[in-house]
Image (cartoon, rainbow, N blue to C red; front, side):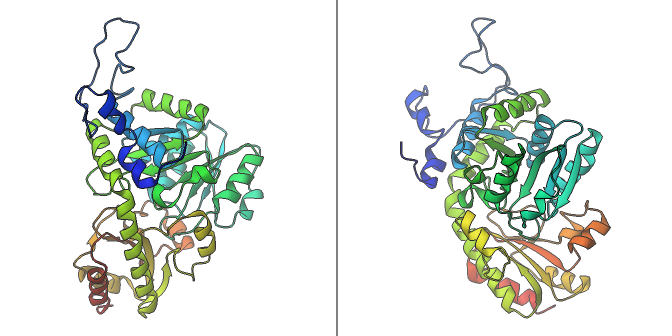
Length: 388
C-alpha cells in the first residue's frame, strides 16, 4: 500500500477509523478520562482496556499517530521527554553496560544519564558523534547503546545516523536517537537505521507550549515490549488530556515546521551578517561544517538557531532585556519565539568545567524561532542588537 503524505497521516491516522467504528462517528478522538474499565468477565478486559495506566484509548490513538509520523511500527507516550528517556535507560540497559553518548546534549539528558545511570552501574562515555570515526575506538564488549541527539542541543551538531547505525549494528549495539529538534517532519531516524527514537512531545509535536509529554518509537517488537513493560510497571504515562492536546498539535505539525524553518533560516542569515556574532550555529547555513550531512538525512533544517554574541554577560543582558517578541524562557518548538542562555538555564546542571570545555559560556544564546511574521522577528532582533 502506498504510504500517504505526512500531513495526511498527521490528520487522519488513528482518528479516521473512529468515524467507522465509534458509537457516534467521532471526527476527533475523544478524551477518555476514565481511570478504569468495566468488564463482563474477570478474565477478559473490555475492548482490550482494563486500567488507564496500562492503556487508555486517547493515549493509544496518540501512540499510533506518533509511530505513523516516524514511519515506525510502535509508539509509546510518556509524561515527559525525560520520562521517555528514563524508560529507555531502565528497560534496555543493565548494570555493567556502557553508553556512548554525544557530548553536546540537553542538560537534563546528561544529568539523567550520568547521575541516575551511575546509581544502577551504567557507565557513560561522551564523544563528538558528528565524526562517526570517533565511535570505533570507544566500543568495548560492555558497550550496549549509542545515544545520539541530532541536531544537538545547543550547538546544532549533526550525527550521521546512517553511518553510526551501521557501526552499531555491526557490533550488536542499539542506536537511540533524540529527534526532538528536527521533529518527524524533517527527519525519520528509524528509516536511517536507528533502533529507538525519542521525542519531547512538549516541543514541536505538541507545538503550543501548553502540554508536557514524551515519546518512544521503534520498529522492533522486542524493544517495544520491553519499554512498554517498563511504562506500565513504572507508570510514567501521558494523561488523557495531554494526549488529546498532543494529538491536536500533531495535526498542524507540517504547516508549522515550514514556517519555523523559514524564520530560523532568516534569523541565522541575519545574525551571521550582523557583525554582532562571533559564531552562528544552524545546519541550514552552508558554513555549518556538517551542512551536507544534514541535507542528506533531513528534508529541512529545523527551527533552532544558536549564536555566540560578540559581547560579555552585560551585553547579553542588554540584548535580552530589549527584545519584545522573543520570550526569555526555557523549552522550544512552540508557535511563539523563545530565547535562552544555556549556561544559566537549560544546561546549568552540566558541571562548570564541562560547560567551559564544550564552549557553553555566557555569550551563547539559543533561539527557538516561532511562527510569527518573519519581518517582525528580524526587526525585534535588530533593535535589541543595537544595545550590544
